[in-house]
Image (cartoon, rainbow, N blue to C red):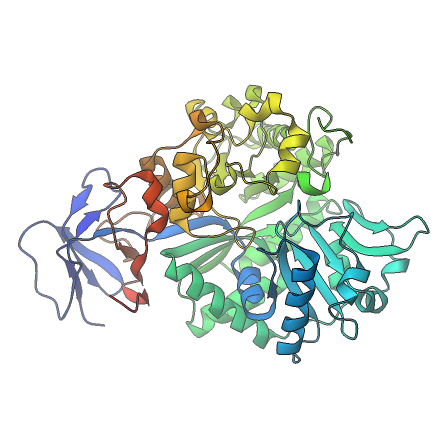
Length: 534
């Protein structure tokens, strides 16, 4: 591979001892030198035209493979706002993909659809002769058509722990599924082939590379995901690095969890695909009323939901996994779930002593103020700032359940950082966009883009700074993925993972950051994305 020189650039290295350069020399996939002024010789030269160059971004909570498979195989339902549009979209997709044994859709929005108006009978009007399964935007709910209900034998399935089949007054399944029953039903339906999945990985990789991402943490690794990522790594077709979290379930004991996760880690040690963490779902989501709160929901319906792991089981599992040197990555939405996870991690630290684990609490939608300081030195706040804005009707159900008196504790990122928490930024794609620049803009403005009819900022005192956001996507994200010793900043000897932007995000109003385009993405010194017009 010939040496590559990127010159005439404004290179922000994110390396504190040497924060700026105007050229970088790449040799054998690594940074050979950085400097200012006179440039060295190189066979391949890229004139950046004075543009901003940053380390490649890393998304530390994403579902890369499943999101890519959705791109390659599923109907896109995110923007639909009526039953008629849903039926027309599913009907057109089924007609366009007769090759798929299961008609898939992703992204219907709670707040538009839900238990009250989305049923098998509705989906039957779009497709009745093939099984259909459509996921909501959070992927914590799914709905089937009648054919899928019959094929999977849903009428005879009992609710598993932390899962629920919605039934009508006569006890018949309506088609709606919540939480942990979804994979049980999916396993009984026709599946995709590995060729479909490899096509999905290629689509997902292209999508993230186009947005400047050169590393991810895939937050749901099971046998299928491990198999596909390992195949891509063996074939040399990965265009980014993948760290993986392997799920722990309520059915696990410390022994069963360790046996499964140790085997996955041993089989996939890296460097480009490695399993390094254990994933817990401590609760669900507000949209289906499975978020675990310390106080009852504040809306008219009221009620609450329990944590998905008891305190005793949480302590047992986290202590054992921490002792085996797994990072622990916990989905927490409600403040009771956040506290339960903190209690488990504190018990593990007491039993095993501190170590640089980079345990992470992801989402942190609602956190009791008393728990902010407990994050310091214990767990990274893995946050998705795009959600920290008013966006009716999608934001309305959760805010109603939380109650306006507590809105100041919702996505309270500034309070967490002021209390000493480490942080990284992520998207949870395909739950929402993975565009880092739209996410960064929202983190700073706490509202929608100015072309999207924004409302007043949501709790603007909890905004992040641009510098904090870029750290959250580079240095801090690399640390969360256990690869900060060779990625996350531009430094001699580090991997040549970098991006060229069409504008200097540090020199424009925050309301323009979302318009930023990535002109080129380099992974190990090789271009994996270049804008057609550059």
